[in-house]
Image 1 (tube, helix red, strand yellow):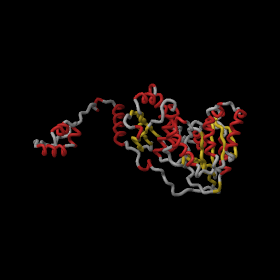
Image 2 (spheres, helix red, strand yellow):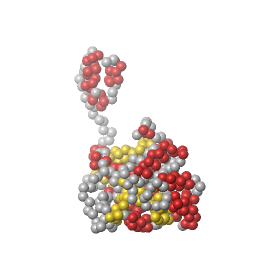
Image 3 (cartoon, one colour):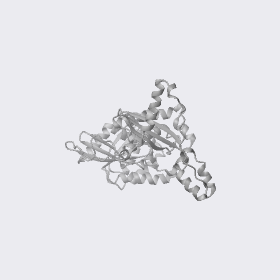
Length: 384
C-alpha cells in the first residue's frame, strides 16, 4: 500500500479514525510504519449546560432527544399491502369493478375521492403508473364498488413517450372492468383542441363491449348549460354504442354523485365482497400516506413544479399516547424549486402539512403528527 493512501487514512475525522483502526494497522504493517495504540474516542463537548436551562427549555431538549432516539422509519408492515383473511359478507352482497377514464384534468380523482369519502387518488398522471391495481373501494349497504387504477389519458404529440405508458395502463384496467365511467371536462369539451382527446378515447373504446356511463363534469363552470354539450354528447354516443347513461355533475361541489352511485349499484351483480367494509384502498399504509401528501403538493404546485417530487420516509413512530408520528423527506431537483415548494414564509409547506395531516388522521383513525423536510437532490434524481 502506498504512502498516499496511508496519509488519507491518517487524516480521517476522529469518529471515522476509531472505526478504521484495524484497516490502518494492517496498512502500517505493510508499509513498515510503527503502530501506536488505538485512538481513544474523544468525549463530546457539551455545548449546553443543563443547569443553566429553565424547566421549559429542559423539557423541550428532552423531548427532542427522545424523538431522535425513538424515531424509526416505516417497517415492512407499513410498506406491504395488508391481506385480510376474513371478510364479513352483508346480506345479498353485490359487486362491480369500475374503470374511470378520461383526460388528465377531467376531474376523475375528485370524482372518486368524493364518492369514496376520502382523498385516495392523486392528481399526478405520472404517479398513477406506479400505483397498486386497485385505486379505491366504496362499500355501501350491500353494494361494493371497486374503482380500478386508470391514469389520465394525454393524447398529445409532444408527450408521446408518456402517452404510451399511460394509455397502456389505462386500457389494462378495462380487461377486468364491469363498467366504464368516461369523465369529460364539460367546459373544455367545447374547445376545438378537445377533439384530439375525444377522438383518442373513442378510438380505444370502439372495440370494447362494456356498459359505460358518460359523465360531463365541472358543470358549475358552464352554468348548467347542457344544451351547448348536445353535439359533444352525440359524438360520444355515436362513437361508442355501449353508453347507457349520460350525467351532468360537479364533483367538486358533490352535485350528482348520488346519481353516479345509483347507476353503479344498478349495474352491480350478485357476488361476494372481496374487501372488508372499512377498507377504502389496496395501497400499503406508507404508500397511502405518501399519496395523500403528494395530493396536497400537486393541488398547490402542479402548474409550477412538474412531476419530480420524490418522497423518502424518515420516521414512522407510534408514540406512547398512541399518536402516529410521520417524518418524510421531500426531494426536488434544484434549490429554486425548493423555494417554491416551501413557499414564502413556509406558506406552501405549512398548508400541505396541515391538510395532509388531517387526511391521514382521518384515514388511520388516530392522532397524527406530520413533519416534512424539503431537500434538494441533484444527482440522478430522474433515474430513481
